[in-house]
Image 1 (tube, rainbow, N blue to C red):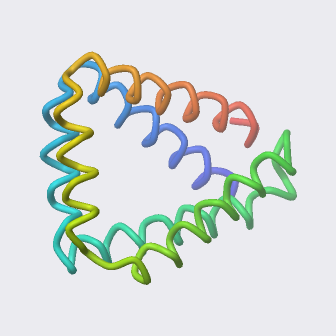
Image 2 (image 1 turned 90 degrees about the vertical axis):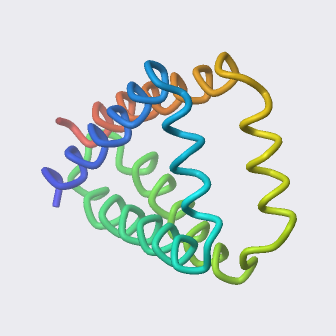
Length: 124
């Protein structure tokens, strides 16, 4: 499970690198999640990521940190379908993309950092 958690950390960091290099790609992906099917896929991904981190936590270098990140991801995944696809989500995505490429690059850089810290935390 630790190896899978490490791979997911690298995937998170890789998505961040893509966002830093090509911020428009993140906007395009975000729009996909505005459909009911996309919302369900996003929720499922969050829950699966969270479960991997929770189960990997006991063997991790920083078990509490990994467990907390996993629990946050699970809760976010469970709440996501309850919120549904509403005009509010469309406005949030529109606001996020309207902030410009620099703003999205900063968020992407944070994903790179989180992925790297998590990779260290799981002990990879």
